[in-house]
Length: 376
Image (tube, rainbow, N blue to C red; front, side):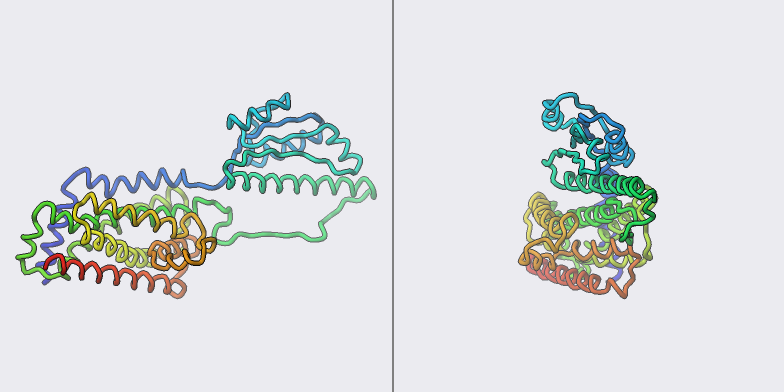
């Protein structure tokens, strides 16, 4: 059995890696993709182009504007001279926000009255607009504290040493709240799924198309040996891709790897068991490689959307949440983010590992059963 399996593995490796373009697709394309997507998939909002319409033109308005510029969140790209220019800069996309000071801003502050400043946002991108609004609110709150301290000193001759209640926040696992630390591990999971599912989905149907299935049928190789021979090469390729992408994530994007690499590869092995099982099942029910590839894409799109990669599962309708339990990507994302950012061990991640093992075993059993019917 081992000798037959050995020759089956050699055949698969030669068939997959003999084409230079296929080698590039397997090893180079995932590296390029993680570099591109790692930079592109980033929800941090920095250097927002902002226009300023200052009708007050006083040291107080310039002080608040300086706080906006110094925060790193806003870049002043234009100073507006007329009301009509507000619509122009927002319509053209030259600025995502317009900060407007009305006349009497400084006078109201000095008189102890409320001084209003208006922030006009481009709300076509609701996520960006909400982040901009949150950043602006923090800047305004800090400015308010400064004004309150000055008012206190003017009236009593004393300076307020501390606020009655001080809230000190601290973010665990991602202190700077960098979205890249959250998304890059998810990109790793996505790329591994794409490579493993597409390669395995064409494994059996390719044999049928090129006419070698009949030769395999007359050999003494069994179903188990055939399935192992089809999955082990792709699993090894998946491990190599994970190692490459992990090195890029850690040393290029500075994503912390707090957990043990053994835990990462254990979760990857069970994840590959699931994705390869899905791919082989697709291959057994497809008549052509083109059909297998299209079916694989139809599977991957909802798998990504229902994994929690972008949209929190808790925000989905309850019926949809039940379907996510059949999605191996859901469990692998918990594992890979837990290993990277939290340093979690088997004691915490065993439910996800068990779920992946159950899903992967079920997929492989279904694929093996379907292969038996195909051979008959």
